[in-house]
Length: 185
Image (tube, rainbow, N blue to C red; front, side, top):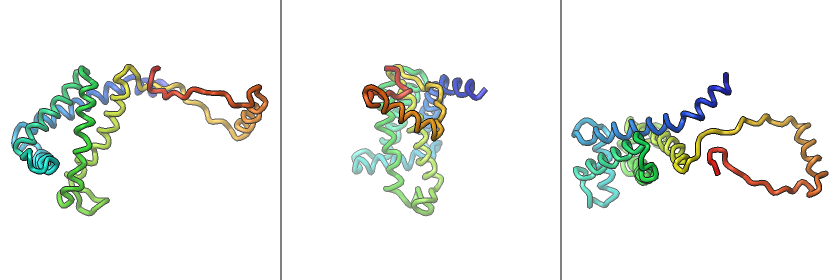
């Protein structure tokens, strides 16, 4: 039963992560088009304005961010243009952490361990980054499947395998190719 559940999760985790990311980005992006509906929009606008040294005012920055987030959301939901979608995500997410530094009074009750609600909203982006990495790893055809987990060797088996290697014709110095199970080379 455990193996079947793990296999199901490996098979569907990327699709679930991709759709979840799409829903989040499209939803939050659309909210930014309507003043007062997104609690994150004012802080995001001020952050973008600060990052551009005031060149882009908040009232311009928020609609740009809304379009950007909607594009990411649609990319994830449709599965089209995934490389461009991942690029937009990679360019956008680092900026989401900037308010933790630029606006500490709004993002921390007690620095560095007690964030405000806005701080919580920002810190949860770590999960979005992880999901984005998972989806991004599959853009070139890889998947999230992994080989059957190996059983750990007992100490006596480890000693035995070391001895077996030294008896090998090459002295146990075989060249091995290291591969990551998530990629299909």
